[in-house]
Length: 94
Image 1 (cartoon, rainbow, N blue to C red):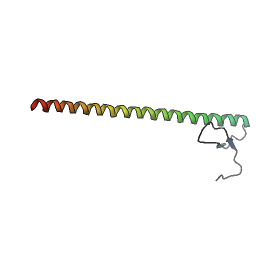
Image 2: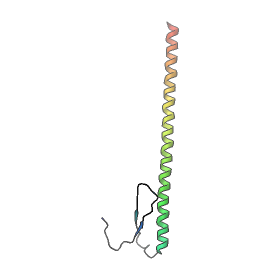
Image 3: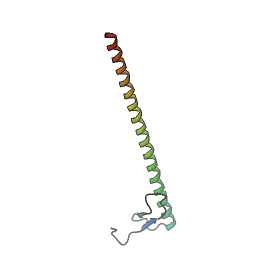
Image 4: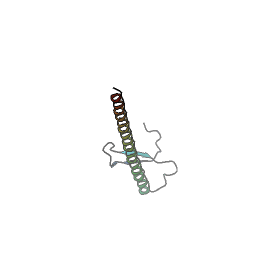
């Protein structure tokens, strides 16, 4: 629900996202006097900044996933070496 009839709203229909078809931005009080072109440019820059942050978040997530994968491989390799060493010791005792 949108409250307040005196709000200035910028609507962006071309978001460049496959998930979102449009974005509504409510202009902060005191910024109503800015030109329509400047407000639209600021809105587009804001949307671009959000998409860049999302891109950075996903690359960070993939780096964390890669580190977790490497950690699991190292643990598996360590357990394998430990098992082989235990088998060698037991074999030598018998």
